[in-house]
Amino acid sequence: MSTSTGTDTPATTAEQTAAALRTAIRASDPQLSKFNPLSRILAHDDFNTGTHGWTELIGNYNGRGDLDTVDDHMRDFRPPQLSSCTFFDTGTHGAMSGTYALKLATRPYPGHTATAIRRLTMSGKGLLQIEAYFTYKAEATLGGTEQEDSFGDITWDGNLHPSEAQFGCFTVATDLCSDQGLRYHTTARYLNTDLEHRMRNQWVYAGVPEPTPREHLEGKVKLGYAADFTAPNPEDWHPFGEPQQLCFNEVPTKVNWHYLRWVVDTEARANVELQVNDRTYDMRQIPVPPYEDRYDSLENLLNFYFSVRTHSAVRNFLYLDSVLISAGW
Amino acid sequence: MRQSQTAVLERNTVLSGEFVTEPIEVAWAGQARWFVQVLGGAAAEHLEVTTQISPDGLTWCDLETDTVHSTEGSLLSWPVTAFGGWLRLRGRTAASGVKVRIYLSLKE
Image: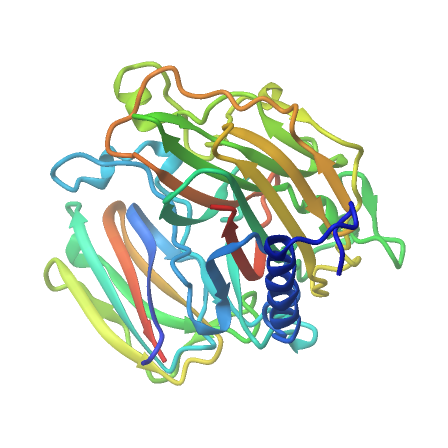
């Protein structure tokens, strides 16, 4: 191998050999070769072996453990489930790797959100990446009348299925804090439908920080059950890139796995890029608004979460076959 | 080492009249144990629950080996096995309601 200048030095040759060896080792591992990690793998989660620390998010509560003090919009994010992707028509579909995937499932209540959060801390600064193989579904409907053949924009035509319009959105996001309490979020949401169930297929980001329990306690904000906890005002969600059609695959019981790779820079407190299948979106110009106030007890916070939100009275599901978190430090 | 998971299916929820919990997928688990914690309510003694199972998470029937459990104190617990791929609770209480937390403890 040679460098772009054609002048090898022992150091660059050694680095190139190490990089090639690392690539070769990863390529020979069926579980890792489907990922493209940064230099340090922090977590590789395959849900055939448990939930791997992906747990339900909940708002904060008082010193007496009284869960009635949890904010209404953050008290019912539902437990992630180990799912065999089993459906009424064909039985067990299974995951991309093995039988099980992690499933986030909403209630059948418009606006309800289910979450899974992974809690880590940062031992350095620089590029931070999450990769995942995912799919998304609305719960199948059994029975009813011909009215059930249409929903939102979609009427069943033997190909398109109203179930696709019953899926609201899913989100991948961070909760990060460094430099003596400077806290910020980065977000990427696939807005499948808007709140009127019209197909949007649009990636969007939140232009405001997430409301916090402290802000509620200070009287700054009070949100109701099923409010959008990431950014409650729909006008605070802004599009980036062109619309992207994913492979819902027509009916609610066919599962096709998609690749997602999302990079942020914790040194610059900035977005970098989002890749979903064959599309890569440059996110460097997307703003990352920090909280005005400093936060104690969160130094080097490194949280990732996935969420799914239904816009209809139909349960929405986000399935994760596997997740890999890596860092450049 | 065996995999395990405890899921909180209802958290400080006031249940009243006839109810069912949200479903949960449990095909991976060989054993399960319900914990129903009564947090308050004048009609706590009238809370009754039993296990339901499903082939697909959509259509449900009672688990034939389970019985109807009534509250006799603040914490009610019982094990279930041979439940297939899905679990939920069906129950009823007085219209005035009972506040509960419902845990499902699962293990391979």
